[in-house]
Amino acid sequence: MAARKRTCPVTGGVDTHQDTHHAAVVDQVGRVLGTQQFAATPAGYRALLAWLRRFGTVVKIGVEGTGSYGAGLARYLAGVKVEVVEVDRPDRKARRRNGKSDSLDAVSAALAALSGRATGVPKTRTGPVEAIRVLRVARAGAVKARTAAFNEMHSLIVTGPEPLRAVLRPLTKAKRVIHCAAFVLDPTRLADPEHATAVALGVLARRIQHLDLEIGQADRQLKKLVTTTAPRLCAIRGVGPDVAGQMLVSAGDNPERLRSEAAFAHLCGVAPIPASSGNTDRHRLNRGGDRLANSALYMLVLSRLAHDPRTRAYRQRRTQQGKTTPEIIRCLKRYAAREVLTALQADLKALNRP
Image (cartoon, rainbow, N blue to C red; front, top):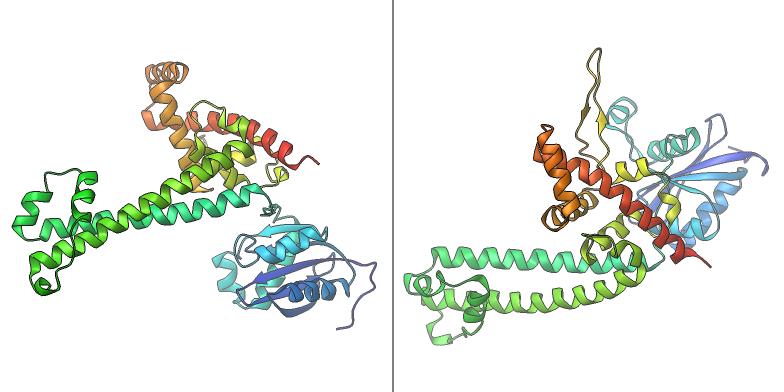
């Protein structure tokens, strides 16, 4: 199809994959002007944008998966001052009706951006918040591996020979690790189940000790980085480096993503969802949003319930009004989200100030 004049406004859409990105371009009334596949490389990003501009002035581009395979493309487009909106994958009903292909998904992304159905601002992933995210990923992996090692150690002790069980069962986790780390291999006794179990426990114990060092190092790095990046957020009662780090990661480096208090509440999954019908007026629990951000707010609320007199007085008052503990915690999470947002916006604006 022949390219339109450069003055004609057009909207792009991109379906992203690990090695290739499939792009589509539509005009202002939604007519498909073309589709094309490009490599998921810096050269491919440049070629994709040049191809879109052949059809006219690019108003915006809808990109699917800006937090995964589309992260590199989103960074490149933001760097050349092209508006990018985050597009969710097409819903299952539309896919059953229209089919599934990379071209169709790219067209769907373009139409979502054109119609305004997709309005999310992608994270820039170019500042200290991205550094916090990657360090938290490494820490979370170490914590998960340590938990798995503890579970494996527990299983070996439960099913192991009685002499080992008698010694290890009364010990605490920490003392078990210290005791088992001293077990060493005797090649002449490896066929003995009791010795083989002791060797396996020694391997797991030393793995746990190594992971403890990794987690401790990550905690020190994150504490310094988080408190430097978000001093106002860390000053909130009940907010420690872990909670603050998760809220920063959920928000991203760019403060313009946090359009309003209600939008931030939905992002954290603490905004009630209307569930009214006929004469019934009610709301239901929101199970959407970023569940890690929701968990961080939950930990904040638990800390305040344990140590903050005002929060404990609120719980007592609401309990007398007939509210259950889960309902009270949901209300407190909503209030906490409002306070966190104010601090987050101030910290991120200071971070992005020239």
